[in-house]
Image (cartoon, rainbow, N blue to C red; front, top):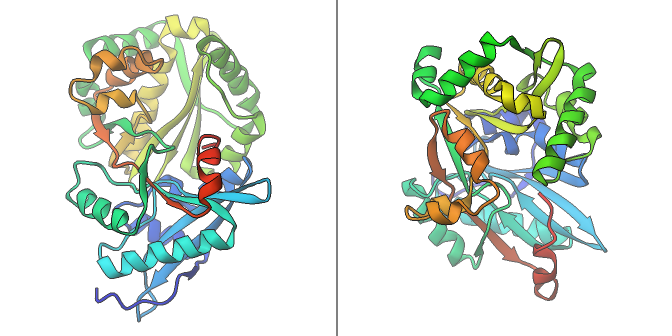
Amino acid sequence: MNGSTSRLSPVDASDWDAFVAAHPQGHLLQLSSWGQLKAAAGWSSSLLGLRDHAGQLVAGAQVLVRRRFGVAAAYTPRGPLFSGDAAIDQQLVRGLVAHAKRQLAVFLRLEPNLMRSDAAASVLDARLRAQRLLPVAPIQPAVSLHVPLSGTPDTLLRGMSKGHRADIRRAERDGVVVRVGTADDLGSFYQIMQATAARAEFGIHAADYYATALRVLGPRVRLWLAEREGEPHAAAFTALGPHTAAYLYSGSTTAGLRSGAQHAIQWAALQWAQASGAHEYDLWGVPAALADPAGDAAAQQDPLYGVYRFKRGFGGQLVCYMGAYDAVLLAPLYHWWRHRMAG
């Protein structure tokens, strides 16, 4: 690339989604349907891109904007999608900052879909800092487990811990049946989510949000139900991105914890993701302290540690994202808002 591009401008959803699908860092959260989903939580979405002289998209971002009290926050989840060309990427950031200013944003948060281990991460970090962006804690998980989906279903099973393989077999032997749910099952799903949230003390979305997810993500999403003798024991939402499938939301009843129902769901979801052509299955977040090789002791104090132990048994590899970067646009309001920004 020679750095010669058009101005940053709106992109049609179909063109944008094709670009995301082809980009090495393309992610579920940059697809236009994810922007439609976040509209149910109060965000608006803009699809913005730079084109080369032939009219081909070379870089861009889905920017989500949330308004409060006459100002806004602007955010690119698992984005932008950079070109790798320093001049083009600098132009992209300048254009995104200008767009955020027009929205009266207090700040613009960029959250690239790159791992710390990627050679491009250190280069991008230096370029973003040179444009006076501040490194900050990300909204999306900083650390996750990714299960490689190469090979066969038997390969996936062999990659799991002995205990997880036993739990999957026990659930099947004890009559736990996993099926793909429909909109008619959202009531059961939400009851399980409410019970899990009360037991584990975490927040969940409103019921309408999950209904919107099932509708707008369409064939990319699966609602899973695990039942025993006709009674729901566990439920989960998984979704398929351009390269990676993701484990988004889940819950289990008290009986489901004993029956291994969630193990059975994840086994079904892993096979679905593999058959759908995903390269990896993202188990979506574990304690951030695990990014430090010596951080296991600190991670054990994290409320997510029990979830981490469950996820670890599926054979995933620990991955650390490069983090997030803020362009501060209204400094007096910045520190007030950044701690109140919802994901």
